[in-house]
Length: 352
Picture 1 (cartoon, rainbow, N blue to C red):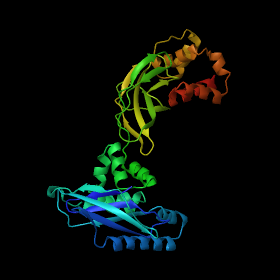
Picture 2: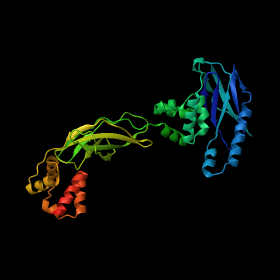
Picture 3: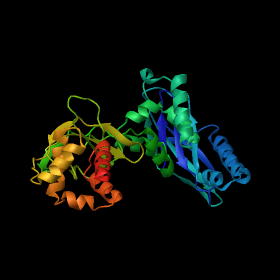
Picture 4: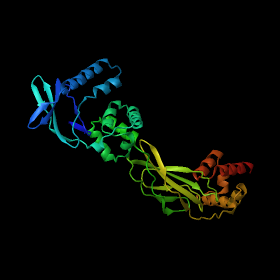
């Protein structure tokens, strides 16, 4: 698999090295009807082969040795070419049995307006990207092709894949680079109410626009509306699809909801717009339980909600008084009763 990187005045040809049998390589260019060896190509590639052998002998440490062993990519740059011109090349591999050639590589150099170099800042960011992924050997390939870190990060995934294949980036390094160039997910659609009852609300939403890696789960947060206060006491649940049943809510209560998507490299993304929904009304017909909650809690409206929830789940005051504090604490927290209200209820039960 031979590839080429073009500029306005040069072509860099890359190909994998067949370590087992090949003793040398030669790059040839078609001039008229004749294939002519490019001057210095054999010696330049030969120096790369010698350096590879030297690295394998002197590198210590399993991980680094494996990295060097799996880097059999050779390259040769033919310079001083004319812009916007077609050229044909081929690579010849030599061994004791003779010489064999690759398929012909047809390239078109870029025009003069294309010619530029990365700025020092672009080079620095690209170098940092490659270093963070353990891919320093690919810096020159990206730089020669004028792919700085920002340009790479803005490419759609299919185009980024094509660039990495063209530059012959090894699969394990492609994944590291893709992860480093990825973004957190965009915001999902505003959550919509699908159904509602006195103690749960089912929500659904549109997934976010694609931003590279797929969404692996959603975080759904909810908070009781406290008058006109903008402070939110968020609780959350997680789900793997674009709908969720939020359970153990208080009856007759307004809740804010919002959703965020998560992907594997970057984690949680941007929050959706908030939505406000109310659970269904339910009355407490147990006057004793209702009176107890109103005495324990400061706000009558909130006390009625807690009492209605307990009543609907068939709790009586006597049954609650018979429970151990730890058990009652668990029940109230499962119902998502506020921290202060839980404490007030437990304190009042201890006094009686």
